[in-house]
Amino acid sequence: TDLEKNRLLEDSDSDIVYNEEYIEDLDNIVNKLEQLQVNEKKSRRRKNRVREDRARGIEQEKIEQKEMEQEDIEIE
Image (cartoon, rainbow, N blue to C red; front, side):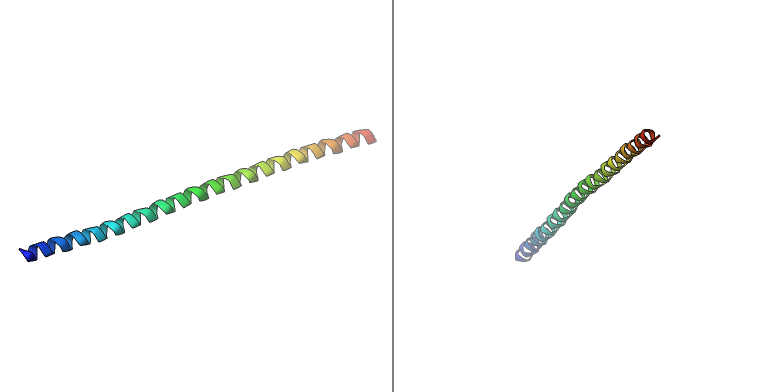
């Protein structure tokens, strides 16, 4: 009957709307995950840079310490 056809059409329309909303939600989730990955990579790079800077600083301190010790030996 027409009433049944209308119900089926309404159901299929609501399914389509639901599916579009579901797909949009999934797209949002994917976008958020991609942004988290980007942020994680940036954070990892930043941490590595800090570690490298510290290592360079420690190495520089060792070099300066040796130079000072060498100067002390030369003064004696």
